Length: 331
Figure 1 (tube, rainbow, N blue to C red):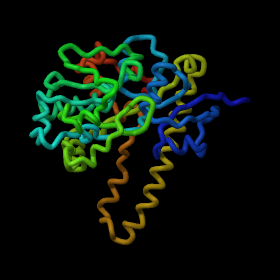
Figure 2: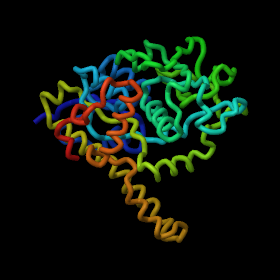
Figure 3: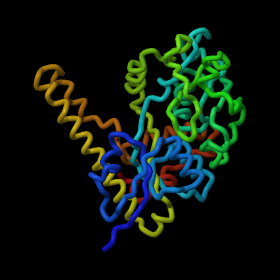
Figure 4: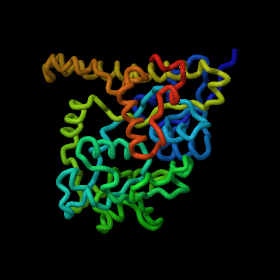
């Protein structure tokens, strides 16, 4: 019996690499992989729907589904996570010593609706009392090159959002002093983002949280959240015809992650045997920072759907059953 051939778009990271190199394969499926920068991948999927399976921005996915008749059904595989609020940059001459002092400032954002921005605004609001309406925003991506151009994005009510002129970028406006800060910064060369300046090398710039590790650890200890960035999606028409694809893709992605986890434990074991790491630290290796599944992640998934609604990106709080394939809801 011939395997089902599906195209798949992935970013290049430890958890996707076994799928990309073919060392892990889903049962009954031959995958044709394309490796892309996430900004470009999501733009191509939302505008052109080029690939049968792909990673997808959680925020853009929620917005797309909330409008009805989405092309995509999600699988609870979360290949990318981060503490996004720790990636904010500020100018050193604007007196911004704490997140609370972002109120009233001119702040850049590559795209208002992107997941990293959604999480960062949620943290600013719920941890530091800074509401999105307290900031004047400047967005770099043009409607033609934005994810929101495909999902019908409009600035939420009460939010001051300016379009950065085409001849400028977040990087250039930070260095020139036209912006006070940026919520995140993407200097990578890709089809969508245009900042290329090395702001980290400038004495005019510093991180909002100078010790990113300490802030990430504080936040994780308090909330238990390691922010989900990407989920996996499958074309809805494929699942309508082949519903078994959802679990087969999920199982392959899970096996790919498990190979990385096992290799990590193998590599670190020598440090315990040499006494360079204390024995009590071994239990930390039993924690899965990249846990897959709906049940395991229900609290953080409920939080991102809440943040999406309260920030005006979705008109209501989506139920997880609207987002994920039915066969994956008990995973």
